[in-house]
Length: 125
Ligand SMILES: [Zn+2]
Image (cartoon, rainbow, N blue to C red):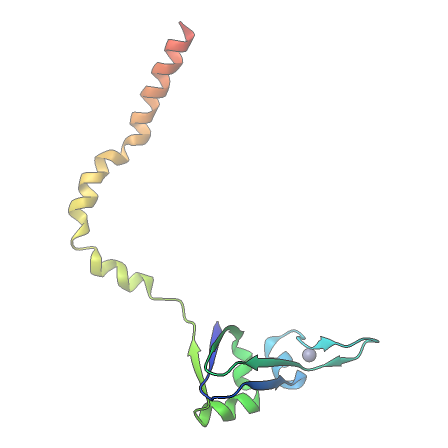
């Protein structure tokens, strides 16, 4: 699951993503290589008043971020998949009528065959 962080402050925020916290939670290293095999923790830039989405939940484990979230400086929005199943039943009661009407059309695969067959015969003759 991914999360969106919203910077509620009027200034830009840059948060470090420490290897032993962020990478460990992530399950892979997201650090930035700076040459000669040296790596530094990657950082997250959160522009003022904007939402940064597509972040791994691991960011919530970073102490700096957790603290800012508690302080209300950062807002977290979890990007849970929308309950698509809950939506369908709501609009379903009215649809069956339409669905029934369009179901004969569902026989179109069958209707398609004869047509194809006819054209085939026409071509053959
Ligand atoms: Zn790392």
